[in-house]
Length: 110
Image (cartoon, rainbow, N blue to C red; front, side, top):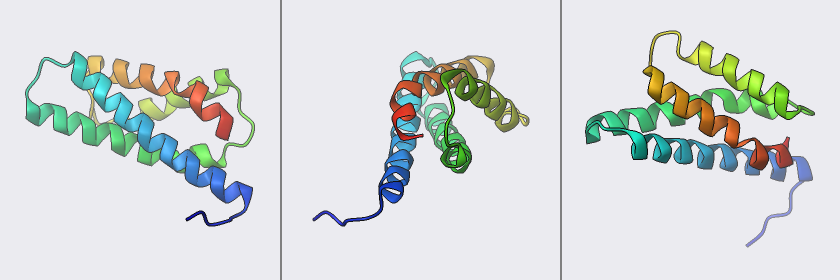
């Protein structure tokens, strides 16, 4: 069943879904490159999902943003998010790469 809504509502819902998908992709990328146990992998997955949950409202407010601005936004968001050292350098590097790589998908909805 398809519920008809305004285009903006559809776009907002899709962006939320895209962000969740990106978070899962980031988590999968970190898992593939991680040499740690299940417990640490689960923790990193939760942190990545939390990061995307944190930036999602800010991304929704951004109307017309280019790739350069998006990458600057991601760098700043990661810096702010990791102030308490939630990620080690390697995991942070992977998260940044995945978040920046998601630009091609997200730009359609910003």
